[in-house]
Length: 168
Image (cartoon, rainbow, N blue to C red; front, side, top):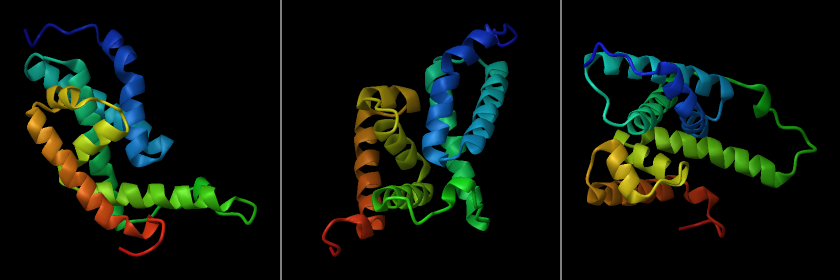
């Protein structure tokens, strides 16, 4: 029944690290990931009240992915400068390049359609299999493969400046 509350402490404890990890990998900010994680658990709690949840893992990972992407999209209107964004002359080039690539990747993921972004994040950041993603998102394995292919193609196009050799 929808009125029967699950052991919420157990659900949060069992899934908090994964929800935070998904959010952090998408957002790249501890504060934003913490806020997104809180939003995810609040939304999941409300969803449970309206009907039973088949898979807490699936629901929470999907919500973490979608809410984090929503937060990325909200960032479009303003740029927040964080302490970690500072570049000093003593940082190695590789570190700076990796940071820049991560920012560009987040920006490119933000532009993907929701399903493509979700599939890409779950496959590459969470290392879920095609079947696990299919189950988590409630789509066919073929739809997962198609979305992953389209996401990769679009991201490759967006990130060509990082290819070794320069031009394509």
